[in-house]
Length: 426
Image 1 (cartoon, rainbow, N blue to C red):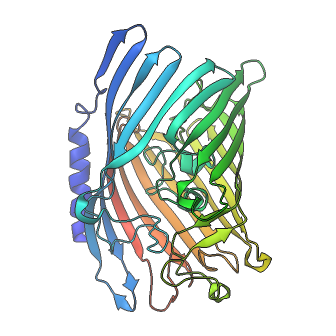
Image 2: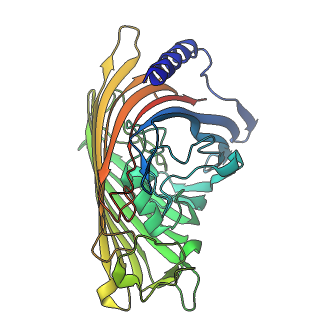
Image 3: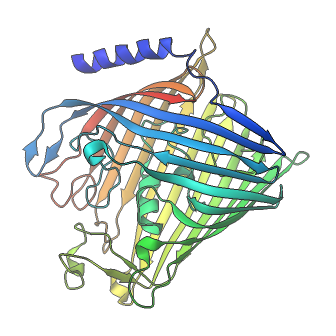
């Protein structure tokens, strides 16, 4: 704990010295509406893991320094109606595989950057505005617009790590941790100033490569999200980025309904937590799971009133098979609340609490157990999310046949942790 205390002191000292560094990134104008902006985003974390057990071996409590999220990118406009964004990621650089993040070695909720060599495309998309309110067409490689936690950047949430509603839906509908795919999305945003009502919609079609193997497979994923707002709008201009904390500038609530559907496909991920009912259908070396259809059905809420911030999400992850007794429906949800206190120096201190839970169905390929995460902590916003320092305690609990404990809760335990983070965006 002395090591952790020193880490927190160093982080606070660094944060106090950095306000002059975090300024706007370079932006270039070329005439005729052409723009180019360069941006950088980083989360530097120190995580102190406690009581972690792997395959019967109890690991000593340990501190791990690593880059949880790092981004470098470019965005801009080709003309007034055509915008674009391309950015790259190098996440989990220096992450110890025994650090107790929301990690599932079976389906890869969070994974180490082995050898610190991974540098990969995060998003690459173009948005054409045919009508600013009703028709905005996005094409490229990006997140399907379903599930608030998945489509909200990790740099915007007020918990330490993103909730389980980020990781499980991405694996379920796309098959990868980043949750990106190539596709097309049509969306719109309409806000009525008189009634204070707003409508934000997105409909997409994506090419889910992770599930397209096998004969006769339908690799197209269809997505729909419809959000209704009352009060101050969640956004004033259509976009694919979302927030949680508006720092007292929004008094409004948004309720959204999410749906995703893919027809027949084949999942080539491994499923070591699959219940025994699957034993006659799984190849132990290379599992190839044919499904009849794959669906997500969910609801989420964002409410902001002065300095109070609240959001909630509930998702059902359904998969049907030709053999109906194998059908399953997993459930994952989270609730999160925080309150802003403005300090005399105009910086903001927000205590926040998040509870997230995943429960596997009796025949779920992801296991039929339970995984629960409780996050309590403080975020100190020096320049809002552009310069943030946070300190959180995260408690993890669960049962066998889950990401928390693997197949044996007596021999595996994810462990709890204390996290110290420094976030820089410029």
